[in-house]
Image (cartoon, rainbow, N blue to C red; front, side, top):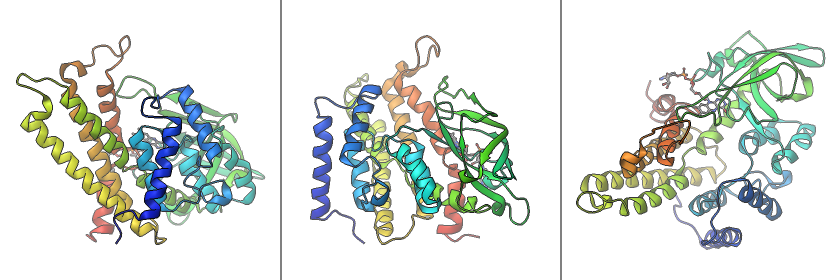
Length: 383
Ligand SMILES: Cc1cc2nc3c(=O)[nH]c(=O)nc-3n(C[C@H](O)[C@H](O)[C@H](O)COP(=O)(O)OP(=O)(O)OC[C@H]3O[C@@H](n4cnc5c(N)ncnc54)[C@H](O)[C@@H]3O)c2cc1C
């Protein structure tokens, strides 16, 4: 098993570094916000790297898994986004070019590629989260369209989305999974309404509830065959979970944490030299290194054409735990200053806000308990 880069891969890494430095040199780093985001999106589109995960025939790079890994790592270390597209880019597009019709690819992929159309993911419902197959949003075929009724919840970015890709119930015989279909719904359709959900950090930042009241969805907005939506949706989740290991992101955070702790005074010196803090920092660093090796192992396997499969659950589980422990150590650095004293007027210090929102990482994309279940059954072979 190959766990280091060869010459060609190192050359590619240098090319990536030069490209990033050309647009955001060390003395002019990327600043989150419309100006730099637009500039970066344009640069990626011109370079042909906007859809780095897609096959070339649909406008992607055709990079192999190692090149994708290098791209994700280098962008995270430089503090620039790996991609500017949202959920359409890395979740829906693979479903479309794998299972969608040629017309659907022509109609929807360009808007995802140039980031002009925002998508949200409608899977979870009030009574269907971990047990997703229990979903009850119903789509009834009436001539050339489906009539959709029901509710989705925890829908990230629904308030700004133009479209939703979602799974709905179209049949109730046989296995629960067999009666599910994959639909694309225009969020401006009559009967769609979006309500905000305020999260632990005291803000409505991303989450929403979406209700469907007799929403008409044309038949040509169903992806693939009726009743096969579960299969498409499950494939999408493995990609989502593999992308939730946060290795590069955590590496950048760790570096920043080390710098911050070196500047944080204690009664006797600096926090970085405090034996208890240093031990916790070392523990999380070791776990991050182990996670990175697991990610490289997964890459080595997928490079031979295998799907990430249950490995993605290990990455998601460990990745979120490392991320959360890092956010806890940041709170220690901030000390008393991390205390939230007014949600409305003063906002939260960044460390506290990141810590609080970071709690959701072990829920979103499938909870960590569910990932442990998958690992127990499918990796360890326990009954
Ligand atoms: C920040 C965030 C963003 C999200 N974005 C989206 C989105 O864009 N689109 C979307 O569709 N969904 C989204 N979700 C929803 C997410 O997928 C669900 O929250 C998640 O699948 C868990 O479902 P649930 O909340 O219904 O919890 P439940 O399934 O009710 O679980 C409750 C608790 O029971 C435990 N549990 C459940 N079943 C088992 C089991 N078999 N074994 C052991 N323990 C179990 C869980 O681990 C959890 O602790 C988002 C969630 C969050 C937090």
